[in-house]
Image (cartoon, rainbow, N blue to C red; front, side):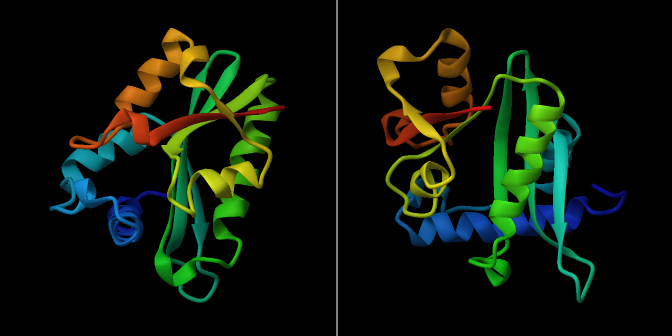
Length: 163
């Protein structure tokens, strides 16, 4: 992430959320969090940015977090104009390489289980679902923390990819 990119990344997040709303996640349909709430989220994570080659503006981003043996993918967002072009896969690859470089045992995330471009996307890239009954306290906490207000945590799943 470069200085000054936060407003662009905020826009990417807003547009990517629109895809989730269109996929039936109505609890996300509302005003986006203000930039002032988004910036601390960026600063509290390792940020990875994919840029559009023509314009030099962000096409997508990922946020990662070191949780000890586990590296956590807290968010992956791709602007719809850049969807289905490998941007999400490239960002996931960058996050995975960072996790390997830091000798993490696994990469984890929480996501919507039934949204076609969420859990199935990660499953196709080697992630496996962790059954709710098998979640550690840490993973349960991450799942609940990342469940948007108004959403049912049962609609979300934790997935792990061993490295």
